[in-house]
Length: 265
Ligand SMILES: [Zn+2]
Image 1 (cartoon, rainbow, N blue to C red):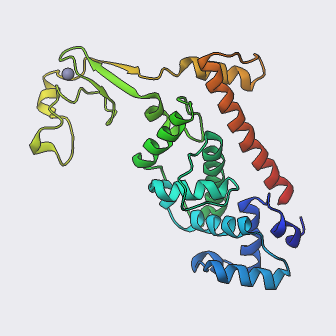
Image 2: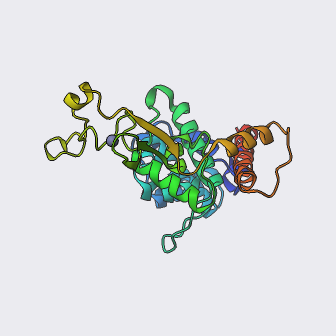
Image 3: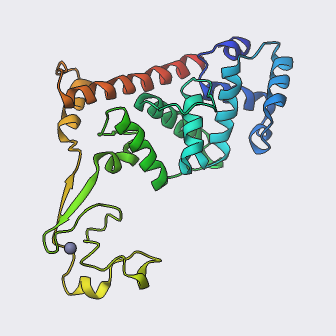
């Protein structure tokens, strides 16, 4: 795609824009990120275009995910960048709820950008804060099963929990090491810093008699979603299928954006 056409196309993929500008200005475009006004003035002068506001935001968002890990660490940054990467001009005065499709597209784009940088960068792991935030947004949208690329939030959305057959404790799984928090005295004041189970109690056999369950069972949705992806079924008007339908929309949105990148590359 011709550079000037890409720059004025409001459907331009963030990575296509980033490739174009790193090609033009070199790696310094990433190592010393430019301000919004410098990007606008330089691009408009050098390519003789009028840059749409959404594309200016996408360029800066692409640089942000290429050069900083905050997208993977802090919900405020994630929330803002998801809107831009999924092609929306963010409005700081309004707290938009994110759809699963928007989050999937943005995470897919961010990891593609990091993959493209290869040796210059790495793929950060999402923080627990982000796992909880993405799960909360998904649940708000009526989705409790999260396949890739949002699988990092899967157990939060499912409400993965346990019941201890010995002490009766029912609790969300936070540490996922297979022990009852109460029977192994995990929250004893002296071990607060590490929140590790007391190994003496573990050695005596305490804490292992737990039964894991999901507050929001995912199996039905997972199966219906997989079948619908392979076009083996027609989704119906029931709880699991409505959730699967939302996931299908999200996955198709990811595919659409990937195809746009191919065309624009
Ligand atoms: Zn217990």
